[in-house]
Image (cartoon, rainbow, N blue to C red):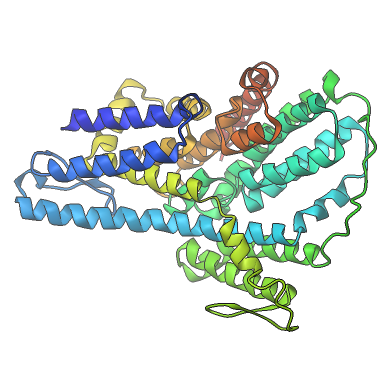
Length: 455
């Protein structure tokens, strides 16, 4: 039965990795794999020799002597435990994504265009790289990439030039997301999973992540595509922006940044703070849209119902990318099935025997995240390693999984969305940008290892 379970996981994993070739959305194999794996676990519960207690981070003693009824009871408890942990991540992401969509509803991100007042390509490169690095740490690397490429499309007409800028934005956004607990799905997983704390994550990763962004950007600034000025004049937006845009931008970003503070003060799970932040942003959104949010409907205050049901909260919730949320649910619960059987724990012990140096294992994880999705890789590592909170291995995993994906266009969510927005060719990125991402990854990793060996 264990062999069949591993085989199903590998097939599902391959289907996720080859979604573009199969033309099959990755959420489909993720959900199917999750359901099939847990069904097989339920069918074979009386034949498994081991069971892993995720709350205690160790194998259950005497599991082989448990009765069938006791095993089924333990299965139900374990499934509920993993469902709860997964739901914490998903509701956190839903809250953050909704706040970002509310900001966009008021055209708040247009405020960033005020920072871009030059036509010099080198200066533009540094502006976009720094914006991507900072913005991705606040609203996550995926959203930061979407925002910046949207701005890029409005100020640069030349397609080839935009491709180069997009490539460096991907590197900078992934680097920026690695040092923030809300900057990347994988760091969020480690943070909510109580593997890292906000203060230590920033302390150990801010410098390696900064160099991971700065070194490739510095090298690229001397390359031909970033010499001279852009050919077209930067045009002002003809359409007047929403007057509440800047207010909603600062309010939304502040609300998201408030979540780690809320967690530190109350010791409650991060999703609770995110729901509080969403409610505050939602109140202002409803006030600014001149509508009163009722539990069942929208009531326009001015008596004009031409914009009835145009609640910014409702509209923002409707724009949430649910396929991504369902994918996270499927892959996290699928990995949880392997973890529950003790496979990841036993596999980690075997891997440590083959490769005693844990740092090499984590760097290979970073390289692997460029080939396959980093979410299941990090989910697997959380079951493989049993190190305490804020151990250096968790910080290194956050860095490697977050920045290693930049080495291929399909290796990160930021890369995939940029690929779709600018129709970036896989092999073009591989030839032109991958080596820059690899240089940044190696420099950042070396810096992290150097810092941790000193302090």
